[in-house]
Image (cartoon, rainbow, N blue to C red; front, side, top):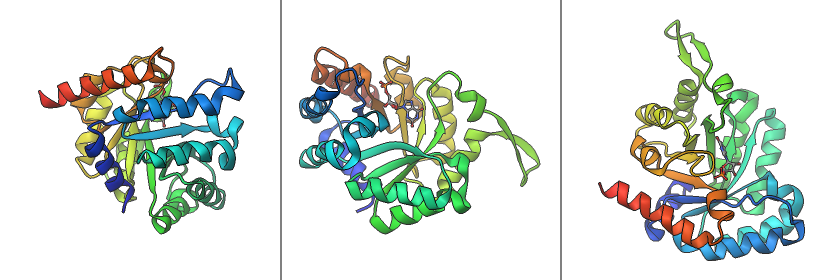
Length: 255
Ligand code: XMP
């Protein structure tokens, strides 16, 4: 089954489009693993997938701690995403992707700045062979994102200038990506990217809550999945916050 289909089924089954960013701050390294699993188990009725970044892989190790989180997620029926933003030359990218997929991740994130040939092509080859997903960064959620993802580039086909993120959204279609990332702090960019992708490539949107993104404009602009971290993980009651966000999404998708 493709990653996109797995995500679809999980969202349908759980009635949620929240991808939990389980990236806890590392102020208590010895509690990191147990707290991550606690939060995952408490919030699982309200989320459709789990995302992890290097904040957990570095202190816990991929084949030790992180694999325990992956097997908890698998037991709960949740797909997992490694937010590694692959960004190197092809032969290195291939090995990085193989490690993450072998550890059990269903998808990983990659940076289209490195291009296709000897860049991300090997990553897509490994993903296709192992039936896993690749999600491309298109427009990030932080303040300086415009310096890179928003710069104007020359389109040789039209001889016009166009924004980098538009070119990346077009590459997501050409490369058959399984998703793109557009920051929740820029709903107008989500709308623009959604106009390019339609329903063919789903938009994952991080930046809700602490970074300033609001659920309603993001969902209405066309984001399919909301990637939410600290607003859930640092809450006194993570399950309550996850349910609260899920319910807002439900309300605004019914309107
Ligand atoms: P918070 O705590 O702000 O965490 O909800 C968001 C999570 O998402 C990641 N993040 C991003 N990942 N592109 C990405 O690929 C982005 O623009 C982006 N912004 C945030 C971040 O690593 C954290 O885990």
